[in-house]
Length: 535
Ligand code: NAI
Ligand code: MG
Image 1: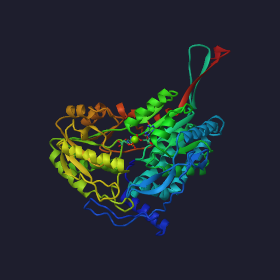
Image 2: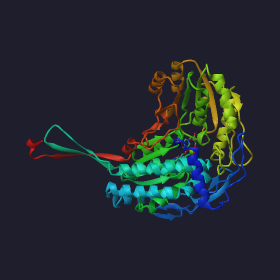
Image 3: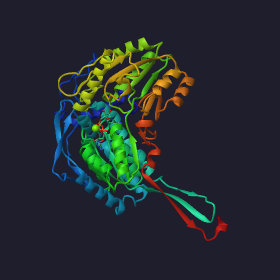
Image 4: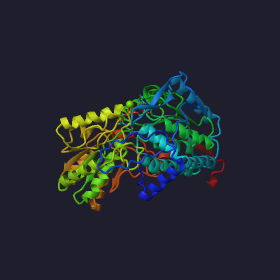
């Protein structure tokens, strides 16, 4: 996720670096560019050294076929064509992976080694991520469709940063000695929780890998991770690098496969001690129920959102437009925390809509392997169709379509940056998570009204506020019921900042010190003291 965007200078130096490394070797990736923006993308392809090396399941340190021998295709969102066939895990593979993680936890070195030893392996992994950043970024873009410049400049550097952050925690996790009434020496031990089951989505495959795997490993757990069926490639690549860094076999097992089969088997497993999930609220409820019905494993959930982005009347409208544009359109609009309800004060509303429309028309949509492209295709046909349905619903419900509204080209899953004005709270497009490049702009009169309307949702993941009035900002940050409130910024993520949702946006927090709690058991050890006089 973003990640404060790198400067243009950093961007061009990184791209030059990858050009040098490539020496002109193409991977056959650049296809015809499709564009919406009038500010043309440079027609210059970027050709990272991308190659699909790993397609099998990773169980006990080995790449193996699925028990059924079945595979499934992973597709290039630019064209819908097959990139590779990947082993399809199901219940039997999950059972094998959990058995391997169980053995690695019960008998293996990982939970028993010192935190410092674990930190060295995680730091070596971070170094390997940096070394292979071009391949990782290329593979991420190929499988997911996000602009390569975003993968290379924001996501992969953040991936290594996150693992360095968790490497830093590995040798600083410890319990307490607490006083008690009576002749007792009381220790509160923090132990790893055991085998963690982790299910991740397709919108940020590598970052979701880090948010899940980082804290679990820092605390000494073992893992079975199920990647999203749309984007299985980078988790396998990253897991391989982690083994190269010295991770013992069986500590991280990676299963590619579908949700209702492999995912459900993991959530339902009696020998999985903890479950972490990111995805839709609907599926979050399913996995929570599976966890409850099986062995009551604790669950953390990071789910959907319908985050308000509130622009007050003192705002510099040009800056507000740019920020709100970024808050919604970043990552093709496929962000759980997207600022998808743009509330604008009535005094600046008309000017804002005009400028937001102009900005959307300038957005450069095209082949993510081309320089200067801001928006690639949506992930797949299902998401593409869902977004197009919501655009129709916006039109039918009487919102004003200011820009976009259509697909681009007839191949792949490109959608025009779309803006609706005159959106009303009760419209579907103002209530549901669209997860695409569709900005809904709503008008408000005063702060109390916007607080009430912004909070009138079952979601509570994030919110944005744009104002230079400190008192109004403070009022809003306290009143908004959301796990993150960004003031005069948006999508600022940092390894140390906790992230998660209120209400139906989730349970628990990821990143930061709070993420460690998800992966620790607490044990009280009470020892009778023979000589209480010395207490
Ligand atoms: P999803 O929630 O169904 O999938 C996310 C992960 O859960 C994938 O790994 C999937 O294989 C797995 N899964 C699906 N069904 C499962 C089941 N029954 N048991 C266990 N695991 C299961 O999300 P999907 O279908 O990819 O997208 C649907 C909508 O969800 C999107 O349009 C978007 O609104 C939202 N979404 C939110 C994300 C977030 O970051 N919070 C990420 C992806 C999607
Ligand atoms: Mg689904």
